[in-house]
Image (cartoon, rainbow, N blue to C red):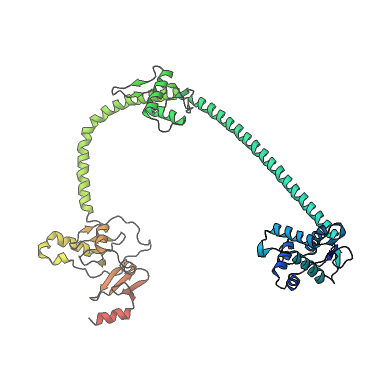
Length: 454
């Protein structure tokens, strides 16, 4: 294999390269699946775009120029040296190794493929690449410097923030210590009426941050209070300690002092005077008590009789109806209760009760004989089968829940009732309406037809 002349103007001039570079398709045509050539092309494809740009071609030619040396010729040994360096850089060995012939083929293929292309100086491209690399390096260095400055600034800011936080913590700690000291310093407080000694001590402890004191803490606070206020704490016959209302004491916790000792003492004096006057009045009242006893007994007896009589009288009106209510135009035929036909219950009293009940128009009757009746000007009245008045609650419990249509229907009095459950009812104002037993409104013709077919 002879020397390859690569000097300027020579057949294999390495001082110029194609300005267009080589595309992936052109490389594929050049290599024709030659694995060794493919490896060389891939090695110089530094941007991984599967082609060779003019800059990548310039880098390849620069390797050839360096291998040629000053005589601008590449000998067989120099090609071998290029191949050895290439194999070592790419960790190729054995069948993977690229030979000197492969490098020579590479040079020939590149020159042939770019023979007609516009050329640019290899050195110019390399210098431009060098400038770009240096500019990129400077940018990286500047970016690194900015990052370092930023890191320094952040570190400084953190240090300042930590120092500020420590200073604030120290200030807060000092303020808290001063607050606690102030809370623990006994100050004047006026004992209020009804205030218990132990509860006052607990309030003092709570104000100092001890919400639920132990027995030991409570007793220690009591002992301290007694030391600060000698002779102020008293005991009753049961041994319970107490304070005089209006007493001015020294106690910790910064409890609000109303300073109303004089007012409390005046209030106590007034109550004592009023108590003395009350005792005198009580004596006079005791003398009048016996006289009033007979009158009270008579009054109670009269009230009992009035209550017994009231059972047969209508309840006071509580406007369940409209204020425009008009009494029914007609009264339904009296309905005989079940008990009325029972000889065992047919006494004069039950007869009277039934007669009184049947004076009021019927609105609804239950299977057990209970009935709901209209009392003009009053609430509805409720009766059992014997004619005795019962409460609405007792009636409704026996009645149970009904359909809303039935509830609406039974609010009107019955003028006439047929065996099949049809009713003719009075609706004061609108007039007379007809219903079936389910509470559905029917026509007069339907009602009369049912009545005539009886």
